[in-house]
Image 1 (spheres, rainbow over the protein chains, first blue to last red):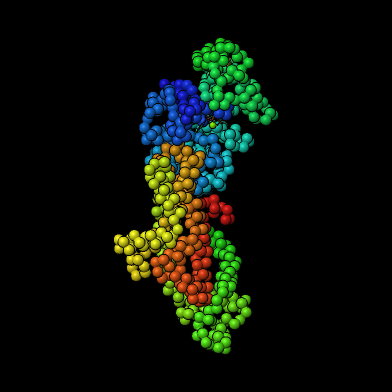
Image 2: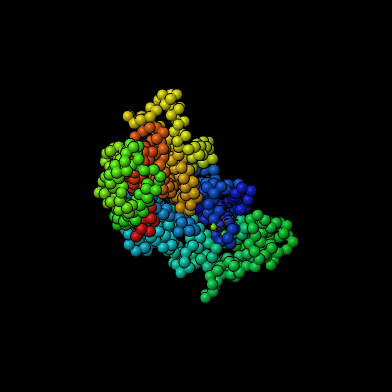
Length: 316
Length: 308
Ligand SMILES: Nc1ncnc2c1ncn2[C@@H]1O[C@H](COP(=O)(O)OP(=O)(O)OP(=O)(O)O)[C@@H](O)[C@H]1O
Ligand code: SF4
Ligand SMILES: [Mg+2]
């Protein structure tokens, strides 16, 4: 049984419907990549998994999210809170703004293990110092005493990773953990994070719009397009034999060595806006294979020779 | 921190000089001659001149200023012309009344204002919020002296719960503190509410929810703490306003205090007392902003960083 199983969830925010029938699962110890262009619904998917959707005014209208065999939708807030930070942890997109600026770094990490593991202040501190050291941050004691503004972006993101690990979670949701960082340290942060996750046998849902990162880190990939899953498959299969035309374009656009790392910009056409998604397959205005059927009918997410894809005309 | 304190203190010196000069000039530019109040109508110019010489009023202005400031710095504010006592004594006698009134009004504004603002922010769009916001709107539009008169009529004259005037017992403080404090409550509550709602939208608050921190703890330990920073700023800027409120309120309630002393002496054109009282008020305002800066630095590491 998968650790996390997301089945056909749809999300409504006001009159908008930014996610529709999103389906994927993550096994214990697995790293799943969630890729898609800006606005495709990656962060909202993360919010759903964290149970934080109501905080941004959204509701899940359909589907199911099971974590370790337990349904999360409809779970009382207090139960969700016991999972958050303890069994499912978040690494956020912007490390610069994700720490409380007037509280010491150490206290912010300690908070997690005090809250969820019931540690005393001293044991929590020892644990945090150990984590800081594991993240290859020099002088853990000094960092523990520092305030967020005294640290660089890369350091802050390491601290947030430490915070996510502090209560020994089973699943970490990392929402574009390096987009806000300097390109020179992006790969390094991903590597540290992936190493720690692998060492501990944790599951990781790694949100990114960078297929390069996917290739570097993930076991399996879910491709989101305009709020729907376009394709899901193992890392080897997806790069060797993409089933969905959009995935093919994504792979074609991976920056090669010496090229500006701009990731997804090379696909012709524009990202559809949430207020007027095209009928039928939402990729049809940009798809070179599009037929009449594609404009009339949305393709279902179906098993192919390997993995799942949502395309009327995918080969194999 | 210590060096910051000293630096701020040094920065206050030019401000103090400018303010003291202004106080001195204003008092000497208003029409009316205090000597006229001292002497009988039929006294001779010689008698007037003798009196002027006694109080140093015959010297050139810049000399008078230098002498006055020099003496003031040693705690000698001269003698009151009408009341015929050392100004320092008069101030020492009145200051405690004003200080207790100001401090209580400040405490009242802070505690009640922060509580009301926090409740309104936490339960936003509920009836608690709407009620608080309505009261806040009323509190910030009603002028202090008018509110004072209203409170006197209701609680002192009609209900007889509190004394109408004076400062003989603690309960005489209640209505004056309310009069000054309610405006402050309104201000503090509004700033707290807005600051908390703004902070609640920040990324780090979402992160705290993602860490599983209970919401009440997020509101109190994190969001409210951030909201206190602008509250401290606004309060330290409003110290003068609270003292100004004390001046009119002391007058309305016929309480002893720096404000009453100031108004009485102004009417009697008792220069030395007016100068002394104004100087005390100015010093209090300067110390208030200094205190605000210190509290701010103690609460916010980013401010401490900027100081270095
Ligand atoms: N609070 C909100 N209110 C209304 N619409 C929202 C809200 N949050 C997200 N959306 C909409 O939902 C869609 C998906 O947003 P989401 O943040 O999940 O995208 P994303 O894939 O994470 O993009 P990015 O790469 O830019 O982070 C977008 O069209 C966005 O405009
Ligand atoms: S369904 Fe049609 S439009 Fe959509 S991806 Fe497949 S071929 Fe292209
Ligand atoms: Mg996002």
